Image (tube, rainbow over all chains, first blue to last red; front, side, top):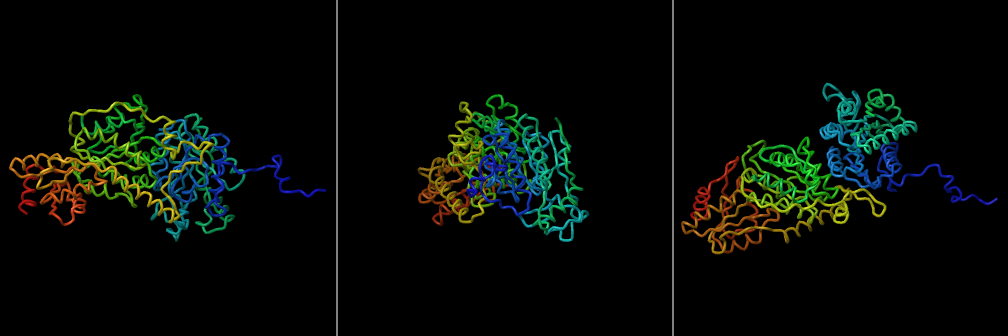
Length: 257
Length: 354
């Protein structure tokens, strides 16, 4: 019996998974176990499935995903901290036939960029906002974020977030759901295959909304930050389920079909 | 037309694709004019009132990164807010036009005209080693002319261009001759002329990335060297100035914008008394007309700079002149425009008799 070679195995009929061509071959700069990689992948898979790579302009934030343009094989602009929705507003208004999305973390979107986020949502800009919420500033080394949970420890809340002194976490997603300009507001996660499928469906819906000129779609992805939370990836996901999800419940918040 | 309106109309006619702004006195007429004109119907130009100056300049970044002709306008406190965005635009090498109709500062200051943003405009303003081409109009006609010239220079150098006006030029009314309507860029022209722009990655090219970030210090230094080489080229090719009555001058006034208009009258008054004074009006503040001022320093006995500030441009004049002749400053602050007789008096006491 002839020996089975790798080439035999790599036949197209045996292929059950292939990395989308819309991700580059550059190794991700994210920590092992971080949700960003999965989130990147499903956004790019949606663009590939909709066949809109040549019509899409992405906006990268400041934060862990500042280098998103290194991994996403599409035209991208890197924004100043918090300003991605302002860039996206102009890009879409000047290029109404293009697909435009921002990819932002919680510090970027819910602290320094609060004004840009709220006003882009309120104007109902026909864009997609992908919001990765891990409750901490990852890139700068684990400082308190606007979304850090009450009592949660970070390098700038070393004894836990005291809401009387440091304020309460900001539920940006619930906030923008109040605004008439948002058409679709949802909160998802990417820690299990089932959740990945749901999130991908949500992102697909968001881009389909844009295709139909319906208005602003806002997809929050509650994610883990095992390095910032000082946990291993498994612990971080468990902690996220036990602590983050009760405060940031998953599911659609607003669906205007 | 008012200076601000002339600038707005000229921007439409220059083929602008988008204006993003936020109201602030004394330049709100720019956006008011644009909104009233419905440029979306005239040319397809987008006009949007942003939630802040910060958002407006970042909208400019987004539009410029798509190869579009985009602009914003504001006045001093608003321009301070835009500095972060301007630094990013310079770092990412994006073309755009920014109008500053200067008012007196610091802080909220006053709504009256001033020239106290010279340092901010010519020496950086935001963080990092960058320069903008700074055009200083001294008439409503130049407000109109510099909208189009600003776009052309911005695209020539992939660099932000600042039109540094002031509350007097912005608000005053003069006759103005406007250029014919120039068409906006077509999609094909954008892809051909600005191949770096984010227009959507097609199969036949690599993806386009607009960023000011490079964490590799060696590469970031190379990028900075390339920027400096570009700024040097601007100095060699884009220095603009006007000379009035300088041929036989024994004394020189250096002034731009509103101060240049006042000073021109002062030159006439001084010449009527038999004192031969000339006026050098820098039109570009960066690049600064260093060479011609240096040449004139060999001809004249003294130089007076007239600015509506505590004396900012005087530093560049002194750098050009060295210690060859006396250089003094005269100016008013806080929104006060000096009178020609004050300038005459300053020339007599600080330079001629000083």
